Image 1 (tube, each protein chain N blue to C red):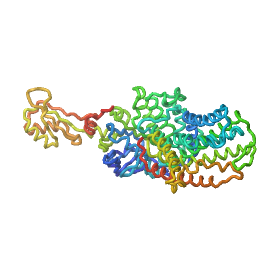
Image 2 (image 1 turned 180 degrees about the vertical axis):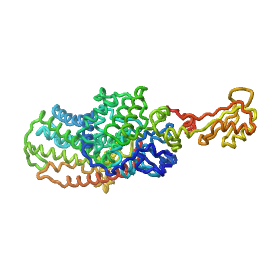
Image 3 (image 1 turned 90 degrees about the vertical axis):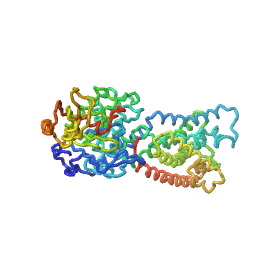
Image 4 (image 1 turned 135 degrees about the horizontal axis):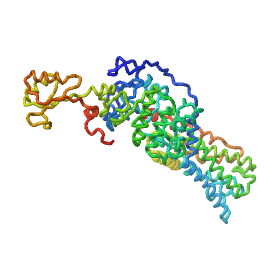
Length: 325
Length: 292
């Protein structure tokens, strides 16, 4: 899928990546390819393996099989060279409740031996300012709301200039205003050249800020590409109203479409048929109608629909998509 | 599937880790967090209360303490207040000090895992081996702080409540006040060394769980079990290998001349436990999936 792309052009690349916990495969043969400079939406229902994949990317957990390259370096082999260039928010924010927001940032920043100590105080102020937490800098994190913790987590990821940001559900717990801020933050970071890998179970969020999308379902990466490609990659649906059902099914099958009788549909003077096929067939409506008429089908009603991105995701990941919202 | 158009040309980054600019920041931060924490101060305050209780009890008691009754050195307190510190050390070593060490050492890794901060420290990247070393160094610093607290609170209580003067050693020699302070500090050093092995055991246990209370309890239970086994004559072959075997053998530091034999034996034994505990912690932690 990405053989033509040079590794250096990918911020994240995994091959045959799998992680098993006992018999259960949390991540199953995933080939991720995240181009540099992209905002990559990592989409999937809860429990589909997104966070486990992120843990593998950051070297927090070891892969059962497969290889990972992040920013051109092997993970976990070259973690110490890779991680200082990566900012991360993994499975929600986590802080010392008995320390203030600023003290928490100081603590986590000093864990990185490459973080310059001299500029630490200034960087903390700047990061807090960027997420709007300046007023709560000296408040104990114990007293923070979930949204404030989430902001602090993002502030931590932004403490230093990064080439790659990995944000796991960054808008979790944020109000609509906070969600909008995160979105514009991600856009401005991406504009500055940072690759952003953002996981979400919310399609709308991904659609609004991402250039690329990968879709996870039960541990497998079921689709990956630019937003446009993924939209085009959907299913074309043809709705046909005709009394000549059997002939129509035969003609449509000849075009590569599968048909079934529909119980719903407009009108009562004919039968409704729903035919589906991959949009890659690129069937123009007029072509289909011409074929039907040439085959002797009396067309009383006709329409072509391309699936919305949402329908596409539901079809990829199964219904129950947003169960645990 | 991914189009080339989205990829502006990029330079290949260098893959050697940049030189650390502040390699000691994590240790400084760890010490600041440990000793800035209310819990740590509560533990130290509880330890300080032990010599205060002993001193108050001796002072308020109308009967002079008969030699050989109560904890060792109790009868000497009325002659020289500095012995409050020594007596308090004898009282604290079997349970109170291991209790506090168990809390701190058991919390090292499991506490971070429980808060979820472990994943952020490792993603920073703190480095797993470096994190273990820093955590152990901080636990060792706490051992020193704990024993110094007992010694200092004891000395302070002694100075306030009892006369300070030349003290009679176990060998019958008499030493002046300055020398007594040195001996008290030597005992604190001995007890600190004694607790280093237990700290390493606690660190190792802490890498196995995300529940700090479990690691704390296990560490404390082990310290008690070790002392119980040390008292079973049937297990005498095992005694020299128990980390608590030399815990109370600091009386030799109160003779003239000082006998350093047990100090050395104890140091070697504790070093062995540090190596063993460190190896277990290293083996477990470096390959561990951090899923908390």
